[in-house]
Image (cartoon, rainbow, N blue to C red; front, side, top):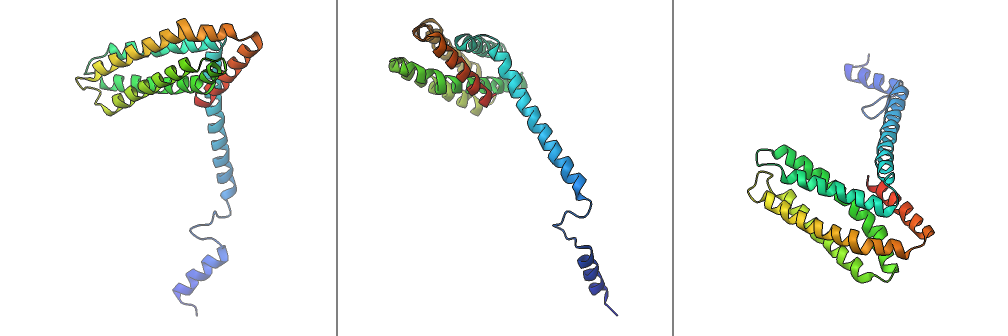
Length: 202
C-alpha cells in the first residue's frame, strides 16, 4: 500500500504538472497575454505616429522646429507662473518640458547640426550643441531641487534666458541660412529625417 507521500508524488507525475509548468489549459492564457502585449505595442506605436504626425503638419523641418520652440517657451512661461504651493503642477510641467527638450534636441543633434557641418558651418553647430549641454544641465539641476524650493523659480528664469537666446540664434540667423543654402530636394530630405528622429523620441 503506498504511503501518502508516495501517492502525492504519483499524482504529480501522472498529471505532468509542476510549479513551473503551464498546465493543460494554458493555451488561452498565453494567447491572451500575447494579444495584450501586441495591442499595447500597437497603441504605443499609434501614439508616437499621432504625435509626430501632428508635428509634421507644421510644414518643413524649419517650421517644425519653430513649432517646438513655441511649445517649449510656453511650458517655461507656465512654470514661471506657478508658486511654491503648486508642487505637483511644477513637477508635471518640468516632466513635460524635459521630454519635449529631449525629443527636440535629438532631432537637432542627429539631423540639423550635422547638416550645418556639411554646409561648412561647424562653428555655429558646435556653439548650438554646447548650448544644448547647458540647457540639459539646468534641467538636471531642476530635477534635483524640491519644487517648493525658494531657488526653483530663479533656476527656471536662468533656463528661460538660455533657451530664449538659443532659439533666437537658431530662428533668426543659423537655420534660415541653412534652409536657403539647400535645394528643394535636400530640404525635403531634412524634413523626412527630422520626422524619423522625432518618431523615435515621441
